[in-house]
Amino acid sequence: MTYNVGNYLLDRLVELGVTDVFGVPGDFNLGFLDDVLEHEKLEWVGNMNELNAGYAADGYARVRGLGALVTTYGVGELSSINATAGSYAENVPVIHIVGAPSSAAQNSHLRVHHTLGDGDFKHFIRMADEVNVSTAILQPATAPFDIDRVLRDAVVHNKPGYLMLSADVASAEIDPPTGPLEVKLAISTNAAKTAFKKAATEFLRGKKTSILADYMTARLQATDNLQRLIDATDFPYCTLMGAKALIDENNKQFAGLYLGTLTADETRTVIEDAEAIILSAVAFTDTNTVGFSHKVDMHKAINLGAESATIGRETFAPLALSDALDILTEVAVEADAQPMDFTPFTREVEQPAASDDALTQNQLWDVVASNLDELNTVVVEMGTSFFGMASRGFPKDARFIGAPLWGSIGYTLPALLGAAVADRDSRGVLFIGDGSAQLTIQELATVVRRGLNPVIFLINNDGYTIERAIHGKKLSYNDIAPMDWQKVPAAFGATDENTVVLRASTVNELLDACAVAQREKDKMIFIEVITDKDDMPETLRKFGAMAAAANKLVEKE
Image 1: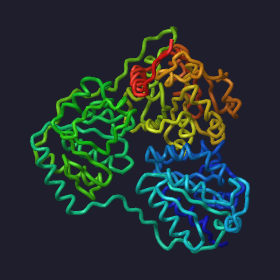
Image 2: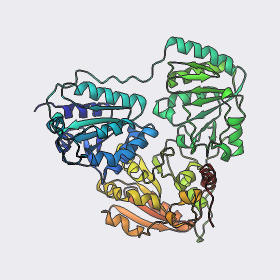
Image 3: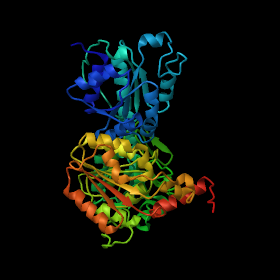
Image 4: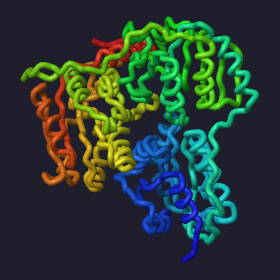
């Protein structure tokens, strides 16, 4: 058996922890997909469309550290570019492999199907350049170098990478790798570390200090370093919404989520009134600050990035985040820095009283939060689900997946699939609205086909509630076509043997549904949850008002 370019690429993916490849077959990638099926350490996960495949690969990468998807040229890759852009925005490394027309067709500038008919085969890689950290058109002579380069760049920078793989190039014979792929994350110099240590010691001396962390701490593999800093200093810490569950929320030093002006007073003072604040890979966005309403004085901050740190006007580089956190763990004690006064966050949620009245949003999130456990991967759609769940406490070791910056509705159902495939020991729990679900619900068929056992809460509140929070509360463009959600799972292959379909419109019905989900751990549980279309979490209501003001929108009567 000959060893080819496709084999080389797949072996490198496996080396980086990929065991599953998502995508949709097309005539330009079929030969390569033969290699995928024949690889003893890989499984092919066929998706319902290319956009869903991109979302699924993103969800997979958030668990495994790297994801991969395969599409065909032109029509396939453009269908998935929204997902790729989301991975770029949210700093998720996904490798997009595009099966392309033969080298002969490209060199002859033929008017091949799936092209624009002008003989230019670089239109789409030029588009891809905007939403990928690294791209390559693979050729047999340079394929090993380019494959290694693109994969390395994606992993190091936590961004997507793009490989255009012609059918004939995929099957071209080359030598196997001669050694492991070297992936070096940010490297610090001794000079930068020494200077930072001196400056941080003076900056922190005797100051009441707190910590604010964002999700990039995890992407940069520095979560353990942050945990050691917290344990050694007893500094209270908060996270932004997208970093929920980054560090155990049951830790006695956890002070809650920081949401700008919507932050609880006892949490807000920890961040805004501290004499010194350590920012761990923090990026303030309109979503995680509720309209840029944060009040963090950067003159009080030690601002840690991926490859540098800033104190006042002085920047120290190259300095990896993990090294900077370790240095702060050391110098905080020497500098006699003190923990900022704070009130510990309490995770305990009071179970709503039994009731047959119509279910409210507050009751919904209190009930489901109290039923989570440490083995759950919780995937939340942007909207009522994101704002509702983010404010509730999480058990230790539970995962939280959302896309608050890119915010492409429908992302979470395929992302749930990807996360569940990545870790079969963690039961997925999905919260998605009816409007979002209509965009990607067909991927439920793949969930069933793969024999997965998630708990899916479909929030049926009759339309686009997050858009209503911003503008057009009573206007028809925020309405959606009604669907009989109770029959949807069966339409996508679910049976009584592998799925339980339930409906909850009261607290009692929701409690019963959660009890069924706890008992039937080997089945998919699909729960349609009915709430009023005007009911929403208070944080979402206020976010909507701020977004409306920013967009200069005036509600019409």
